[in-house]
Image (tube, rainbow, N blue to C red):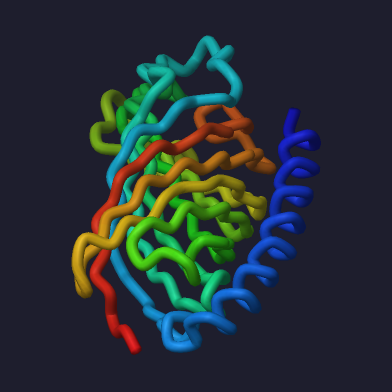
Length: 226
């Protein structure tokens, strides 16, 4: 499944790059001023998370992880060419509460995922349409997972507390797509879908595979426009 998604992404990206090059040459011939239009933007996306990872199997862990969660993402886009945009994003994904029984106590708190991604967006219609920009996005980066302990119950040592409130890290890719829509010269909105194949090296609350998809809508502010 994952390999098929990678192959499809590579093929579509290659096609869009070739298609975009033809559009750029044609548009520059007929409308050179439009082709020089570039902008950068910053914004925030809010959405939901759809779990595609493993199910809890640890008897010492009481999970309240549903198949959905909440996503918050800050992003900065910089237009490298009329059809290629670089994006850096910082996300927070809430996966629900977990209670861990360890030693003589219990630890209660949410599982939070923090993706930090470096990506490229390919938007082949950017040179032909001022407002409506569908795109493909792909890249990679670091994903941090943490069990944030809110409550500890029973006879708990400091070492047990630190062990329960652990942080794990994964380096992986992300694939997706969406639509950027300009509402004015300064404000825009966007719709975004991403797939994260998260596979931590160590277990976080008894689970290594936290893969999933995010579906979000966001608002953006254009930093400059030439």
